[in-house]
Amino acid sequence: MSEEKKPLNFIEQIIEEDIASGMKREDLRFRFPPEPNGYLHIGHTKAIGISFGLGEKYNAPVNLRFDDTNPAKEEQEYVDAIKKDVSWLGYQWENECYSSDYFQELYDWAVRLIKEGKAYVDSQTSEAMAEQKGTPTESGVASPYRDRTVEENLELFTKMKNGEFEEGEHVLRAKIDMASPNMLLRDPLMYRILKKAHHRTGNDWVIYPMYDWTHGESDYLEQISHSLCSLEFKPHRDLYNWFRDHVYEYSKTDYPLLPKQREFSRLNLSYTIMSKRKLLKLVEQGVVSGWDDPRMPTISGLRRRGYTPASIRNFIETVGVSKRENIIDVALLEFKIREDLNKNANRVMAVLNPVKLVITNYPEDKEEILIAENNPELDAGSREVPFSRELYIEREDFKEEANRKYFRLTLGKEVRLKNAYIIKGETCIKDEEGTITEIHCTYDPLSKSGSGTEESKRKVKGTLHWVSKKHAVPAEVRVYDRLFSDEAPDAHKDKDFMEFLNPDSLQTINALVEPSLVNSKVGERFQFQRLGYFNVDDDATSEHLVFNKIVGLRDTWAKVNK
RNA sequence: AAACCUGUGAUGUAAUGGUUAGCAUACAAGACUUUGACUCUUGUUGUAUAGGUUCAAAUCCUGUCAGGUUUACCA
Image (cartoon, rainbow, N blue to C red; front, top):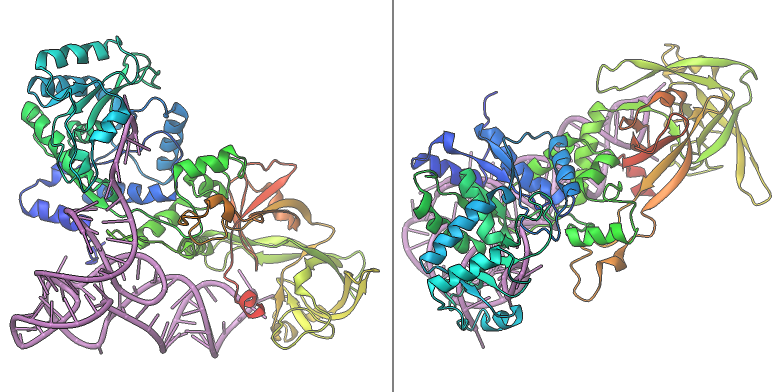
């Protein structure tokens, strides 16, 4: 358990420094604050991993807070999905919080700011305000309403709250600095009128606080010590601190701790998109079957695809935390799931592209039960696999003739059938078009796997997986390829990401699997030997097996072959 | 020619002024193999750039270059 002196990432260093300079470890508290307006994706797992990981490391509480300040976009469906995903990843939150729970405190503080002349009601159109805002190089112009009296502001704000105005008529703004080089400090909006039902507060409110006003103060109310977010919020930090420092003056006895916002770079994955808006488009246009389509980079998609929580957490751990822009190679994610499943998934045999193989010297009505090891990495026992005269093997595993680099079945050469016998290719039968319909071979009865005979110890270069024709069970297998053909589909200025959709991202195959698989359960994962890792899809029933290909095995032969 | 942030192999990250710049992935070669998997061994590529400080710089300073962020009644 010796904490290897693992290097600290920059956030952990900040925390260590804070502790060194007097912060109490018991005051450490973190939060993961999603807006419930979509499903969580692999990018979110980084933020989740950082905050919950810190919670685990420092034994500090982590809140799951829904940043639900925009009733127009948020729904209970997303709240439920987010909770499910975070739990599935294996994290436990201390409190389930909602920004909407703080609407009253936020309102009271806003009134206080108005009374102190730090906020005012603006009554212009959003276009007029945008124009006055200036640009990063030119300072802005004050609103004609900037100097309304406190009394007038109070009256208007109260009426806003009471629903006496329509959407867009008035907003509340913080009075900060229209000349600040930081655009966010040029009198940012604190409240807007939105006459929409909220998924939690119903119609109680018609004014809703904006992100900047809400987020930091929610952190403050929850006494979050370190508020960690992604880099694009860096410019918000000044505003975060401005609001926080004012509110602190009003409430420091109740809430003595000042939260600290720090930013890290978000995760990008090659060959995928991460924007909620774009993912939504894939769902709405039916490009995928839903948020949990196994090709989606959503957590629910990865779950259905067969990824394990451990593999995702290991992935995030390996990716690390920094402030640079990055694009992580999906190969790393694939490596992590292979690493996990190599150790933990039982091995079975399945043939995806079958061709018939007849062992001509094997008795017609003979059947054998062979013993197959479940997982050489684990002591996972063994199972029985039926063997008979007629089998199926992969079409790719036979060629009439081939060069020395081809380790599979050819005419006149020997290979081993996994867990069974050594066979020798004899002849093959073709149809009118020249397609092979049947391969004939002979077997060496003394070469049975595990029999210990000299013949069984003979080295042959190739080993093939197979299923017995009579005993094979049909199964639907869904084979996935990446959704996009481009490494960074949404990074092109002149092209829409939809142009890079891979038309062959889903292939549905009628496969034949070994009979032990009939009783497999939804979610169960296997290695189909020599092919890859597969799980049982949600669509599977007791009559109809459905598998998803999670990821292929590393395939050096495919590379040689290219 | 605004402010702020960031530049370490193909990718991600470590080295916190002090041995031949480490680790993982990827790639390549080999060993092993009843999975062309796994495992094992070995190898290839790196401190953006120019100066400066220092006995010593990836690390500190300055300039340059490159990339990113910010101009929503979204979060």
